View 1 (cartoon, rainbow, N blue to C red):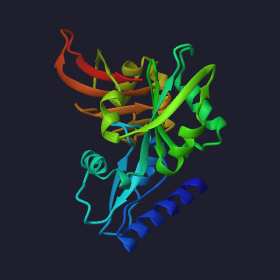
View 2 (tube, rainbow, N blue to C red):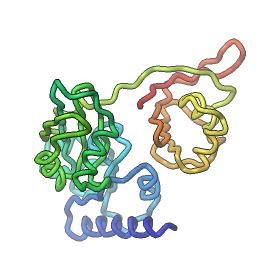
View 3 (cartoon, rainbow, N blue to C red):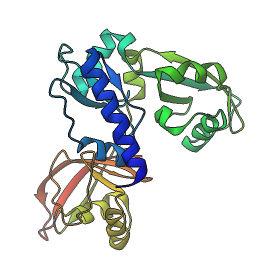
Length: 264
């Protein structure tokens, strides 16, 4: 086990213990996909504590581990989001709407992330950054969000203005739009889906899987021959994610037709 994983597990256990001892909601810093996969397999000795991963945005790749006492009636991310919409003061995440002025050039995810780093904000303090033509939406820890709003005024050569928006108001505007696509494979092996879905070679797909860069339903998967099914979510770090919508039809040559939604 890596030393940073030992530290992460210690922090996670501390948050879970605090929830159990004080009957209050606690949460971790933001976790990347690999950390989430590791934390999801960690068995906690607190039977009265629920653990739900939550990223602020629907389908977020970066998320916090939220620990809930028994009296909070939420058992999955969807019901937890509803609870936080109704009880915003309990939400550990704030959604920041960032708009650029009309004279600013087009800005990328890297531009916005670089601007946050220039403010001295560590990556674990922020979650997904959803970029649009007019600016972006940033998920940030509640304790960091106000600082971002007060200090984030430029990125690259662009001038910015930031404000916190309610979770419910942010949902519709921030939902990433998937691009439909389809391809055929000889079998529903993970390496075949990754190769065709992300437009890379078979060897590159296998290397990425072996290196722990591919996640199936938020769990790291290092088995190239894992069988993929409908509704599976596949994430490849630095490439994006896809959701398998349908894989029940066959081409005239007997190959499986895979229909997906691809998200960058």
